[in-house]
Length: 323
Image 1 (cartoon, rainbow, N blue to C red):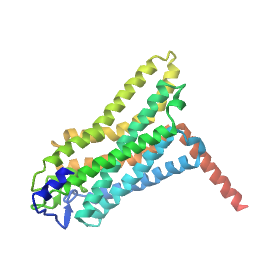
Image 2 (cartoon, one colour):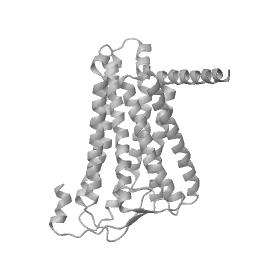
Image 3 (cartoon, rainbow, N blue to C red):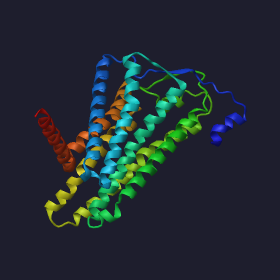
Image 4 (cartoon, one colour):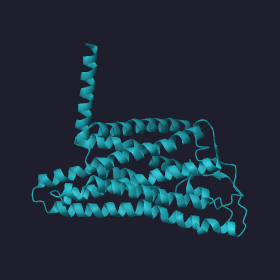
């Protein structure tokens, strides 16, 4: 807060533009086909995550702490897709490249908050898997609904606070040169680099945020699976080890889909073409919300059985309605 108010104390006049121009996909050949692809992904993400949320809500057998975390993941994926994709399609498919100053900051806040929560949700699911495999006999006593809800609430508060600071620091910048953002949405990095005054606090939070949002969650997940591997090594029977590990395959798939692409972009983002970087980054943000519900439906036996029961009940209801 002191950083934000320091400029006001020194009587500095901020230059805040009426609008920004989003230029990420401009000039890329045949880009409209990519927008059709993004639209298709968005529809699948909305349908898939809504379906997972409905199944968990309707089936009382899926009210365990684990599925509270799965529900929150689907809820976050739905919000993440809905916050970003409609605006991206509006900007580039309908040629509405201009976005107001306040709308840009609002879009950034919601997009980054939901993206951060996707990583934090994977931490909660990782914690659940560790406790289930390391303490199978005491799992229900150690992992309660209250504990999972408290973890989820803490991570929501952490994500909101961190992104509020990130967005709030942008309000102390003057944009007196360019208003063209070289990204496909109101991205923090390309935006704060347009500032004319001191951007040191923005650069600091830009370096800290990925460590908190990506580094710490990935380190915890890797550490948790080291503990899982150690616990599985103590199981004498091979079939039991495989059966226990299968309960982690869905979560491991989600971790790979979320962390591998974004890590690739961060490592090679400076050496690949800017257009390739923008397309790669957009894919890494829109694919996980679409693939997460598919993976959980296909790899989680409880959800598959619940979905079959709901479909059978609906079919029987239709048959009964005809007669």
